[in-house]
Image 1 (tube, helix red, strand yellow):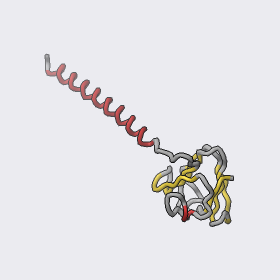
Image 2: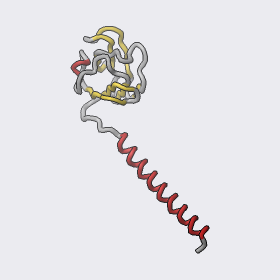
Image 3: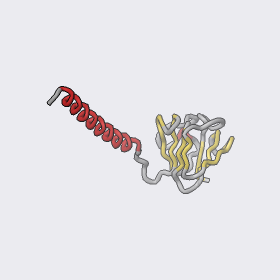
Length: 126
């Protein structure tokens, strides 16, 4: 075999290995992004945009986000995913008071804006 043929064979082998690695990475990353949603939960609330940071999963009314299922989320929510079959309402004050926002079912808000960004204090299905 000539030196050029050997170089081409090595390049092909490396390209094939690279494609296999890339395919393996794709499978691994898609499995990692499919986060486990707790059974019975209806909504995901996260502290960072694009459902990043700490998240809590809620099914029942939360009159004070300091008492959220997974800790204190008072005025610390930046993104929401509503995968329930109904709308959820959120307020900027505890006890379902202040500015109300209605969040439609089966929708994700990757980035909240004023007046909800880091201002949600209570929420419930509506």
